[in-house]
Length: 104
Image (cartoon, rainbow, N blue to C red; front, side, top):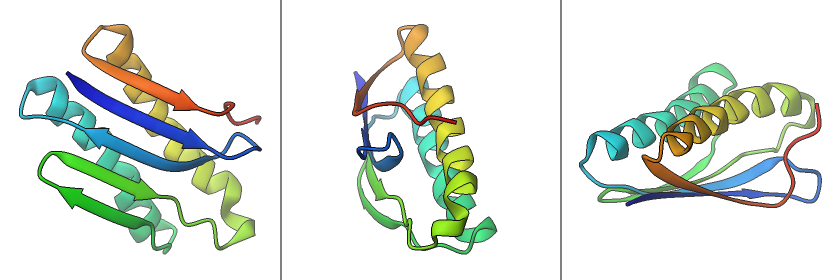
């Protein structure tokens, strides 16, 4: 089974995401959803999230070094979380969230 852990800080903002995937359609879909915000943070917001990859496992830590980009960062990563939750509702993956959701 594909598992994703979303870790949040005390303000509810995503700090770290860990994916333990596989080669299934669900694993590839979850991997694409996790990879997309990494690209968005790097290419669009010019931030440098710490990323570790090992086979089908991906872990990234959100770079929150620019306080003025918090809302944009939240939009990028919360869109990923919504997509992962949609896959989880269909019973395709398990999403575990640690901490509170972001307050918009």
